[in-house]
Amino acid sequence: MFFRALPLVLVLIAAPVKAGEHAHQAVPREQRAAIYLTTEEKAHIHQEMRLFLSSTQKIVASAAANDMKGVAEAARAAGMAAAHDVPAKLREKLPMQFKKLGHLTHQGFDDLARDADSLGDASQALKQLGQVMGNCVSCHAVFRIETGKR
Ligand code: HEC
Image (cartoon, rainbow, N blue to C red; front, side, top):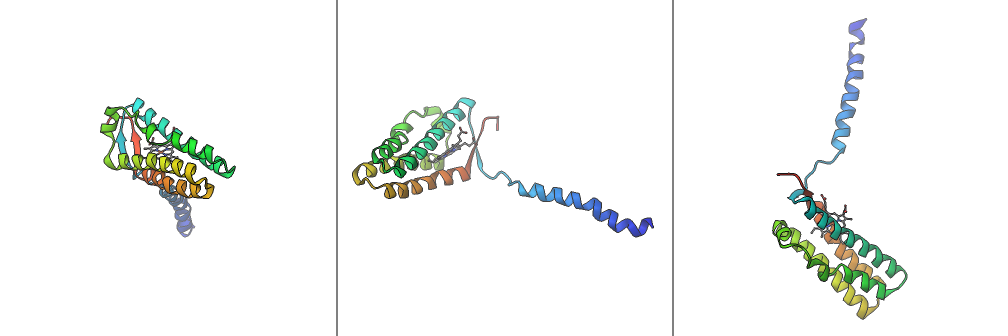
């Protein structure tokens, strides 16, 4: 009796283990490159990111309301002028690709601001925002920040 039931018992034992394995596989493995920073430097980057997010929100809302002055203002706030207060020590720690993508993003917002002013075209502004946001997506796919010792 016991031996006849054995296969069933094995299946019952094995099933939850397999389900557990599957759940483990569903969590994506961390593949982004770590940038090691101090807590303050991380806070600085995060603050800049929240400015990016807030400008993006204002651009979308203003474009939807056909408020092109609002679009230009919001985009300019995330432009090159906002990039200048990165401390030299932090700048040194950032990989070249990170700096390039960051630069392109600030520059893209400045271009968007200039074109919003001169063209006054909401759909053009949104098209440009879509392109600028390609940089957000690329950088987030590649980098993460760590504050512990490496
Ligand atoms: C040059 C690289 C880079 C670019 C470009 C970039 N980000 Fe980030 N972003 C990061 C990194 C790195 C983090 C922090 C991830 C971590 O803490 O591990 C981050 C975090 C954030 C956060 C979380 C901030 C917080 O306080 O928790 C937001 C929101 C964000 N980014 C929005 C954006 C938006 C919107 C854009 C584009 C307009 C953008 N980012 C462009 C690299 C970038």
